Amino acid sequence: MDKQATIPKQCVDELQNHLQPELFKSLCDANRLSIVAFLAVQTSPITVGVLADQFGIDISGVSRHLKMLKDAKVLNAEKQGREVYYSLNCGQLTSTLRGLADALDACCNN
Image 1 (cartoon, helix red, strand yellow):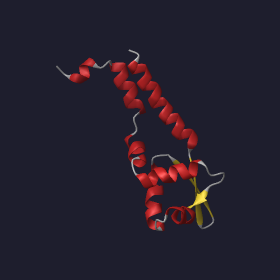
Image 2: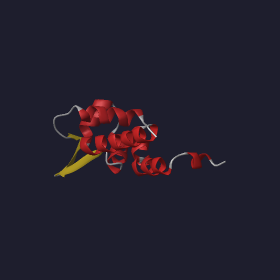
Image 3: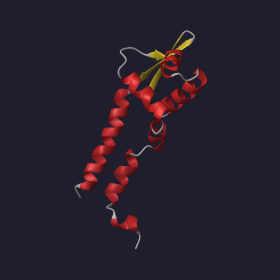
Image 4: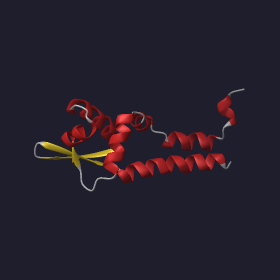
């Protein structure tokens, strides 16, 4: 018997709508999680140089981490002159995670 056939179709559909592999891939690295946590408590956007100093990672490494987080819509990036300022896209991140949690709750209650 096919295991997926025993899962209600609505659960499968809802979970597939909310699962975003690029988001979870971007968050599965300790350095990226540290960057997210650091940006979560900042009162203003931060440059790559500040993040490199904060974490002791060279700028190219921080830039790669930031790109992955930005591509996954975890971060906002705003160019001002020659600098790019990064901030946590908190609304998008919490909405995505809340949607996934709600989909799981709905499946667990079936």
